[in-house]
Amino acid sequence: MDIELLRKDMVAAMKAKDKPRKEAISSLISAVKKVAIDEGCRDDIPEEMVNRVILKEMKTVKEQIDTCPDSRADLKAEYQFRYDVISEYAPKLLTAEEVKAILQDKFADVLATKNKGQIMKAVMAELKGKADGKVINQVVAELCQ
View 1: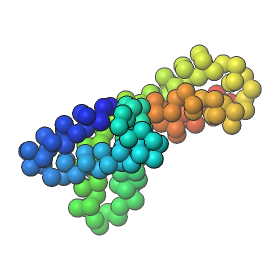
View 2 (view 1 turned 135 degrees about the vertical axis):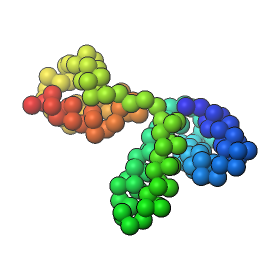
View 3 (view 1 turned 30 degrees about the horizontal axis):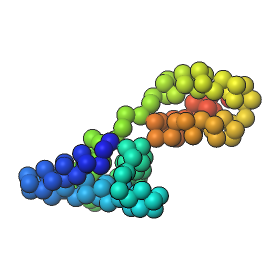
């Protein structure tokens, strides 16, 4: 995901007077800029970084939805809308089957050790941002048995 696309969509939402959508996209842009400044690349923000931040924000909003009390339906609906907007920009993540195929193909030598910690260390460097960490962990646990 390119940050310029996010900016264009935010401007479009502003012109359409769609305040909730504008706020959701604006929060994404702010989070991306903050991480870019923290990592020292303020001007040219790589797409990998934007994708990583989008996934992190998506996870945060998902936790907000899950922890929101049922009595606050208005707040839950707001969080759900934000989640839906953010998920439009999120990169497609690998499925469990795709992760398993990659592990068996590229990391067969590490899998042979059956050392879960060592496998996760090697695999996460390759698959971070491409697949959900929980999915990777489940597949590794399955393969270590």
